[in-house]
Length: 268
Image (tube, rainbow, N blue to C red; front, side, top):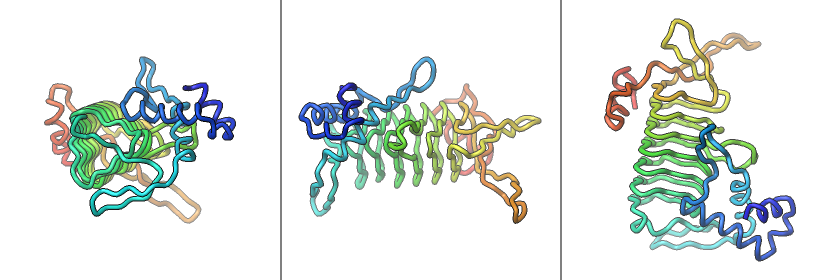
């Protein structure tokens, strides 16, 4: 499939060929079932499978617009919706919507929310009300994505890495995580933390600050912050994120998600 997808990416006229169409549909089906992933963990970190992203991008031009009716609700789109939640062991509360090509594992709970194509959500994760999981985002096991959270999607540019939220992380209300940022295992983001590829993530727990970008270290407890930056017009406060402590390894993970925030008097 990879060879066919790569060839079609370089020559779009091949999108009319039956074997190309079959290969693209096969990739989407494998994504939907969790057989393929846009990104996967390895012993050397995360590996982005660019050819799978290419297949997702190529899926759009071969699809035709259709009207989708569900009771009194009507949609008009190219991408079908995910189905058969009961047999997959997924709890889906109205009006949660997930597109075909997104993998959602057994035991996941979707409150009214949105999951885009290419996303991967592992078992035991909660996606709370009005949260969005963007295209190709990778969400680990037992993650709590709180209400109103925006997990960014990525299809183009092709070399861009997807957002990755690792196992047992807690993403507080109204957080935004975009541009390929990785939130490592058991990290806790307090409410309203905004993380982009250029956001300064500053560990303020020691005598001297330690600065990160694009990655929140494991078990970090993070809150919104700001730092002073000089411009031509004067000095102004620029948003950043502050690491104010660590979750204790000895604490039960489910309990410590909220307790880690309360220990540091941070809102969820």
